[in-house]
Figure 1 (tube, helix red, strand yellow):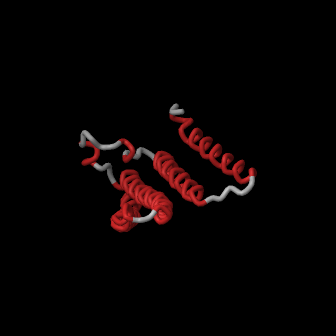
Figure 2 (figure 1 turned 60 degrees about the horizontal axis):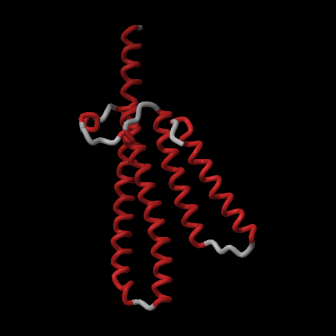
Length: 174
């Protein structure tokens, strides 16, 4: 019975390697997002070359479109970052520590994942930032027609501040 148990435990332990599919898929998705957003950035910058030669009304319109586009780009880069952190976290939790990151003097602590809760907390913070960027994106196109619109907008900003405060409350960073 001891041999069967040993074989089963070895099989069970090696089944953790199935997480590599999620690690690779997440990493490839992250790289794809970085590529798409970078191409969009280059495209946006190439459209801005004619900005100085436009008249005032066209410049105002282009500026508004550019600000909205920049916010969308930030959103895309944040999503790519979420996928990258998720990939690193899964790898470190289920497969192995990333030795190149541990031995590097200039590696960021954001990529060191010590537990599933740590991974969830890091991902939640980036998702919160994506939601804040989305709120900002919608705020750029909002039209305030009544005082209630302005009050609701201020309430949204207050809730964002509260969410940021609560997300950092456990770390002592207020």
